[in-house]
Length: 160
Image (cartoon, rainbow, N blue to C red; front, side):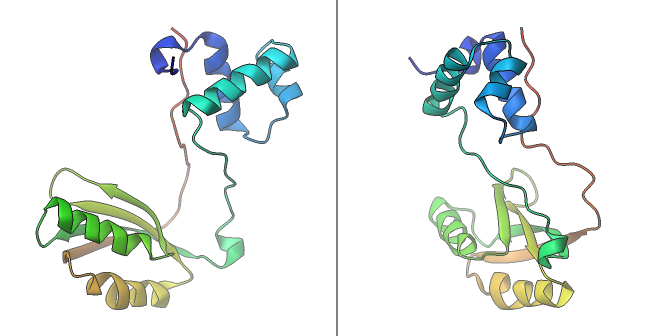
């Protein structure tokens, strides 16, 4: 039976919260933090992974140290909001390495992209030479991110 949020117990939730805080935590440290021995802790962790609740583990990179100094939100209005047009747009933007996230929206805009690049000149080139040349794009609005004060990938889970 697949795991859902409805059949997570307090230990599963503690495991998920600990992994959100530090995905590189050792099994021994994780087991101690959730008050289990290592074997049952690892068994629960594998079950959470196999269920799909844990989609992947990743590293957060320091953009400024990598020379990535401009981040922005780019809002897109499609020229025609059909399924095929949307699929073609999504395929096109997935090929752009500058695009970190692509979200479908309800409201004035059809999509929001979070993009990152070296500098404002690279951002301008991205907008004019790449994004504006995607056939499905009707309108582009962008907002430069001045500073990111926090990041959270998921809210902390609460026990019932």
